[in-house]
Amino acid sequence: MFATKNLSPQQLSLYTAAILTIPITLGYYVMHPNWWVSLIVFVIVFLGSFLLIKFTLERFIYRKIKLIYKFIYQTKASKREETYYKYILPQKSIDEVREDVEKWASQQKEEIEILRSNEAYRKEFLQNLAHEFKTPIFAIQGYVDTLLDGAMENPAVRKRFLENTARNVDRLVTLASDLDEITKLESGEQPLSKAPFVIQDLIKEIYDSLFIKTAAKNIRTSIKKGCDQPVTVYADKEKIKQVIINIVSNSTKYGKEKGHIVASIYKTDGQHVLIEISDDGIGIAEEHLPRIFERFYRTDRGRSRDVGGTGLGLAICKHIIEAHGQTIHVRSKPDIGTTIGFTLDVK
Image (cartoon, rainbow, N blue to C red):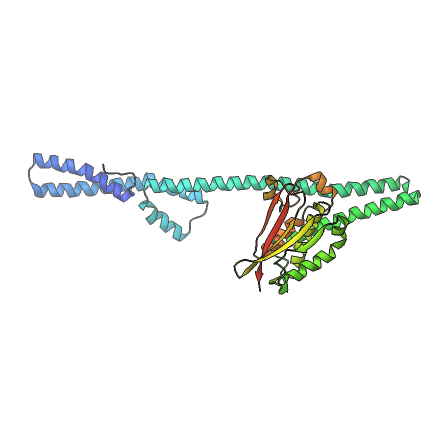
């Protein structure tokens, strides 16, 4: 059977006009068997039917469809779009129009889901931000109020409270500094100063600078055997130093006594190098892995806050690596350990 659902308005007009004209012409021929006159009747009826049906479709149906197109794209039509609406759109079948509307509806649904997700993330971020600032502020307020209420007269108490106040002020300064750095990295206000350097030398330098922290927990630091051959990368050395310091510091915080932190360096495709820092610490549960690079996200809020940090370290790492046009990832398992890796360009 002849399918009409995918016909354009012109084709549908022709098809309908033919259906109307053929029986009328045949009827006229039966009553007046003159094929010349019948041919003229056929042409007149066919053209009249075609033009009337086409005009009706475009005037009353596709005019409404044009309004739908203007609505779903929510823009004032340019001359090019007006040409499209006038000459190209009428060529579309009803099914093609339906597909366009369904596609638009699907896009709208996706956008709504993204907006909802972003709104939930924004609320959580603001709550976390408020909490991170409130903790040191309330502590400072408590110490200052106690000192003003008379504790200042006791030298030992005064010194201890002022030291605690200073620590909380430092925490606030660090928090504000980290937030400012993330903002600059996101907006591109912090240009990268790329230069070639040997990644193994930088890792050894960081191990030495964090020796006091790692030694306090008897944690060994090393470069994996077979990965000690010098590899030159092309990146912002100070920024990459910050990334590795953050990762090694986290491995130290959540590492076990007499544990091990090891760095691995692999050349991947001749243009990139993969750097991975692994530990054998407490690990991270699978449900937390997709979110550990978010600002202030903590897998265990109480424990994380006890060991210090602003909760922005890994977020800064992510922004620095992405500013280099590279990727960062994490693999982890509770009680087994964690591996955080990122790629850099090879020089």
